[in-house]
Image (tube, rainbow, N blue to C red; front, side, top):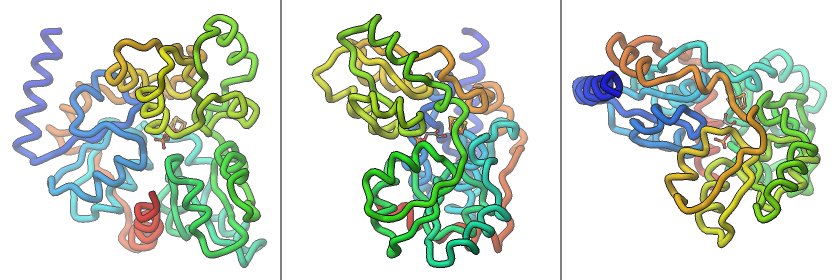
Length: 303
Ligand code: 13P
Ligand code: SF4
């Protein structure tokens, strides 16, 4: 506790010296979310990065999020607490693969989940997050859509559009692990609870949801619902904001495996260190960033 207090004091001092803001995804450790200027889902954090007048953005999430921040705010310095925080789902699609699929479907427009590399975004018509994926697909001026990389979210959104959606075979290791059996066991144990689920889970699991939505949508739903007890089908870091918003409600995570190891490599100590050394810094080549920016800016226009 004493060490944490010292780290927090040092952090405040460094933030002022560097004119920095700290952005933290809802999947971060509690100690990280606690010191953030903004907590949020991928959409909100991208928006905050685009709008900030700070000089330095400390992005506490995974690599593609820091990269997106840098693309949207090219004149800012973007640093991350640990460069090992990648997203396995984002790594499941690369430019070569995407180009090959585009050649097979020359009339299709590409919608990429924000969980992709800058290179993939530079070959994309419009990005989306889980918060606006359905509206983004329906906003695109084409009847044929190439969707990368999440097959589970792709399956979910394709139910809300008349367009033909060609879906890449990627998935989130963390959300995809949740099974129907896990949910059924939890329902038996907590019969009064509602099941709230992120669309990165498998289709048969999503189907069981009393509510389906992005991290932010889940948090908002639980806060506003009359129900007092929830089985949660998304990453366990979300518990921090759920409990903050609804201290009188009960949240049971659907399994103990709903933990993204990449999100958890960041901690308070590493935030202080990266602000001290200003490393690791995110760098995106200008030509890639210029193309990728268009797809991200289009995403921010669709709520
Ligand atoms: P959201 O922040 O859009 O809910 O996405 C979940 C996720 O897996 C981020 O990596
Ligand atoms: Fe990637 Fe899944 Fe972790 Fe999000 S939770 S960063 S999609 S692996």
